[in-house]
Image (cartoon, rainbow, N blue to C red; front, side):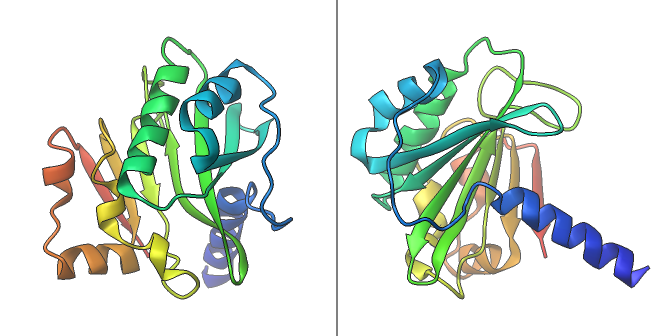
Length: 182
């Protein structure tokens, strides 16, 4: 049973980080209307990496954060929301950072749950990079993000939030689910 859990965990990590291959910082030209809209809205605060369709019918976009501030992250998620209004497909946006150890995923937002596609960003996963690049591990970076209903947060980030006295419901009163990822 333990081997099965390790394989599943390795598979999940591979899926999460698939967009964060370390080729150094680069800013590709947007290749569709969604990536073009977002890039127009966020400018040089985020670099556009790529867009692909996954095996589970998700349209996945990968960006790199260049300006690690709450306002920048809030603006990015607002741009994602506006770009995907009235979309009826599953869409996710992963955001990576180039750090001393290479590329690492900082957060992921998407417009779907296990059972439903929403009109806008529904889900946020804040990824633990405490052992690699601490500047992206401050829970306060997400204070300007609007509309999150399902939050997944890695345990180390949750610990930081608790130490700072942060209640996720103060950021998102409409929050329905909080999952601590171990």
